[in-house]
Image 1 (cartoon, rainbow, N blue to C red):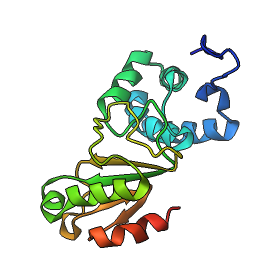
Image 2: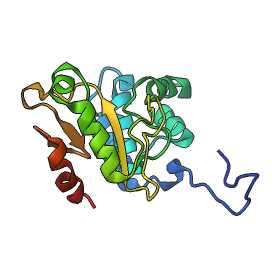
Image 3: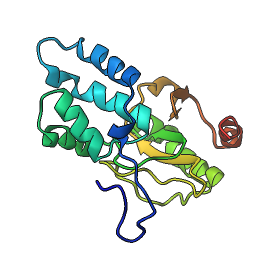
Length: 183
């Protein structure tokens, strides 16, 4: 990654690794202690911590985590691009993840996702496949909406995970009120 772009030399990009603080490093060190047999096993927890801190995982993050775990960057890159939960681009401030597996789909999750998209100004038909891409995000950067696989609450379908809060038994009529909680 470079500090400027060729198209606009004044448009500086900030490497996430340059923003690592001593407190962040201490938290990383603590996470790694949970994996005494193989530091490689800490890869996913470190990626989650990184993304929760910075909003995505850029090239500098991949390199930093790989170096911290004494791995090659490709070992971390393959995780970021395999698991749809990880993003190489930032998503909206509020991420609405709607479950689409069988119980939720049968209970109306496709309509719920469509209504969430409409409520935050997104095209409900916009495609998103994860694997490093940010989900569709509203023009103001406040909301992203995406389908995810099972959120482990089949008995209260349809469900959505909004940031870290699980919303259960969602009805299309309840969506404006739910979105209003995050504006």
